[in-house]
Length: 253
Length: 253
DNA sequence: GCTTACAGGCTTGTATACAAGATTGTCGCC
DNA sequence: GGCGACAATCTTGTATACAAGCCTGTAAGC
Image (cartoon, rainbow over the protein chains, first blue to last red):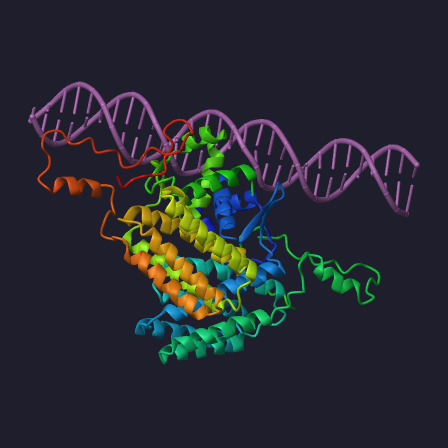
């Protein structure tokens, strides 16, 4: 594949995985083209690849948008992850020591990030755990699949997760690694199943299937005093104008 | 997505699934553009999507080629299928009656095709079984993943499978469905694991990692009498010239 | 006779131009 | 004042033009 095109694709995907780009964000071709210093053609390539991978969508003659998975799609994504990740643990006969070591280090990093209150890298690490785990099998194909899936569930969490129970997730990860170390992979699989189930159960899938959801909350409690309180444009500002995309998407303020 | 572009993508992918296009086949942009009556742009889109899905590859300024998975990739593909499909059966709590009915009908069709000696639809059906099974969960995401994976293993079989044990495969499918009907999904998963293992074991992964493999066989047994026997161009004729792609890839003659 | 350099043709890579549709702001009308 | 039509603007969709690199066939040199 082309290095430049791959870079654009990678840049956007990892920004999503890291939670730096919100679901529903519009990604204009020209804007990205300017940003990366190439023509629209290359950006379009990257976008179409990402569309195939299920992380962006095109709305005809309106633009590219980071997907906002529906409740139905959210359920599918979690089910898919459950199927694949428990299947992975089940088919793992033994865990190589270096993989175990790397996973333990990862969990330690999670705890540090949580302790430091680093929201940004925290979310990133929690998703990364599963990708690391996929690496355990040394199967690139599977890793790629889980990576794409994780991107989707990350977006889902951003859409539907009222409160991120980071400590609980990290603790689950720890237990899973412990079971792996003990060689009880069936148990690890069961824990993984529960873990994903918990994350899914923690979502409020009735919350915001549409961008107007934020509105409704304002409308119902008698509001509408004098001036509509500016309706803080939920998305549609991919990169303000310069490329200093630093603010880590702190939505819940 | 665009209907026309999607059609090109679909057409090529299903031709691969049906075994009508051989691994290693070159797919020229202009040729396909003429064939579908569009410009190269659209063909390129379709190709790049297919590249993301892992079924074609581009060789810089030479052309697009249907992938020829290496032995390593073949192992990964089968392992991935094993992980996902056993995981699927494990996480299936119960099997809806209509799904069971549909699977039984499918297996019956397999047997008919085998009985009739219909090589073409036979291979197609054997792959389709797994896709149908994915439908059992009603999870489009998972179905899509398995579909792409099946495309790859189909190509792998075309590359490495000396003799296709169709009857055995169909019998395996039958057993799996029987276990599902009996409600013993753990058993079904075990059977699936064995089944995929058998298919993988039936491959000769040392066979032809390169297009010259057919050559070596000719070279070693003292051959080279007078004229090199024409080296029947192993691939490189996507659609001869008109679009009457009817010959069902009977390679093993 | 064999090897090497070169030229021509063919294929993709990339940018650009133009067409078609969507959105939004404005003006006229009721 | 409110509503609807219209025009300006912006965005993607598609095709085409040209650049750049690979492959092959040919001819010259050894």
